[in-house]
Image 1 (cartoon, one colour):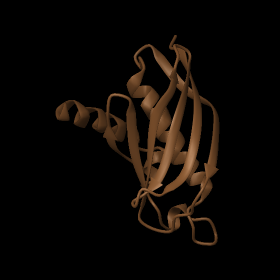
Image 2 (cartoon, rainbow, N blue to C red; image 1 turned 135 degrees about the vertical axis):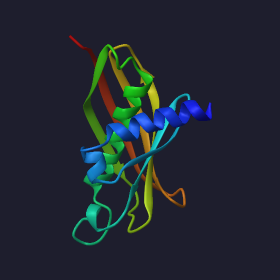
Image 3 (cartoon, helix red, strand yellow; image 1 turned 120 degrees about the vertical axis):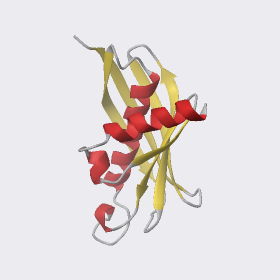
Image 4 (cartoon, rainbow, N blue to C red; image 1 turned 30 degrees about the vertical axis):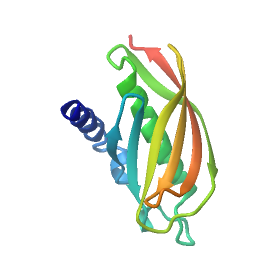
Length: 140
């Protein structure tokens, strides 16, 4: 399983080259049968003016991990995935270290998917709860 897991994480991280994920230093760190985890460093690059993690950066992390999870758990050879709605509740601030986003399926339909994404800090404090709806459309 470790070799398969490492191969999936390599695909995820290689796909981030020259994207927003690379700009935000998002790295995919863990994958399982029904989840994907990514981390993002918290520092000036993702601060709002008062020196705390920007909610938009948190949402970008969450959407990145949810969309990538769709890519690896669905038939990416025949379908492409697009986010159609995202909502976030920010519960706690972060000023340093890393935040981690873990995406798990709530609903895995043929066309639409619903993801639950929990964003936590290094001490496992819940930073944000995010819901992401995605749609899978056939490639032509």
